[in-house]
Image (cartoon, rainbow, N blue to C red; front, side):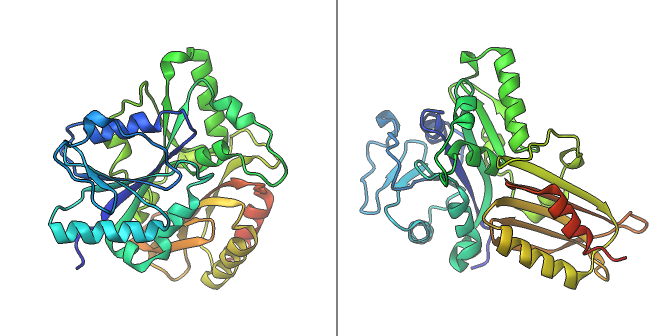
Length: 336
């Protein structure tokens, strides 16, 4: 039953940014992988007819087989139920799925889908969240980011940029170099460490979007220190931004648990993503954790090397982030 988990990628992005084009690439390219694309019920995504395997019958699960062996299915209602059906189906037919792509049209933010991977035991056993990929339109992104929303309504574009592990900056042929540089700067103001790939017609190497292990605790260990350098532009308002904390020293586990518990409860709604690598007093390994809103997972990973300086690194992406509160609260957990 154990076996390797199937990686799942969440694709998000504004209407017209190029998600459908990207999905059609994935479903037609000869990448040798058997990929399952799951459309959620909001998706009015037209899969190109010529990609459909003419001999495939559409089963009652709305699963359509493509010419290259990939499958596409529409989930009505519960995503978890859809994922379970798909996994069981693959086991039954013996057609192993290499990767799952979940397309989230019409959902303001990918968090609920991401949280599914922390919440459900069956999904956790069979699937591993691989990364969140956001497709953005080089020409229109800034207008979307600056759009004024009524009180209490989220700006979807900002959230989609904030949650991303990878961003496809698409339709670059329609923008000047100056515009592209400005779009990238704006993306980094929200999500400082994200990898951005410029492309047109959503053409991108599969390796950039599949198998990136952005949610693996091992990957978080390699967290780029540049991401933590506090030289970013700070916006002290209700915008979405990134805050990095880098402290030498070790934390007290009990104090840390209390603080993280308080943080997730009181600020969890505003904090979209958290990642950290911590030195905990009395623990020989590095403690690595991550959270999507309040859904938290963490475990001791590899040991500190002899003589290695004990440091704690945390990154937060969210709205209304108060650097002083985050840093002050965390520093209170350090062993004096």
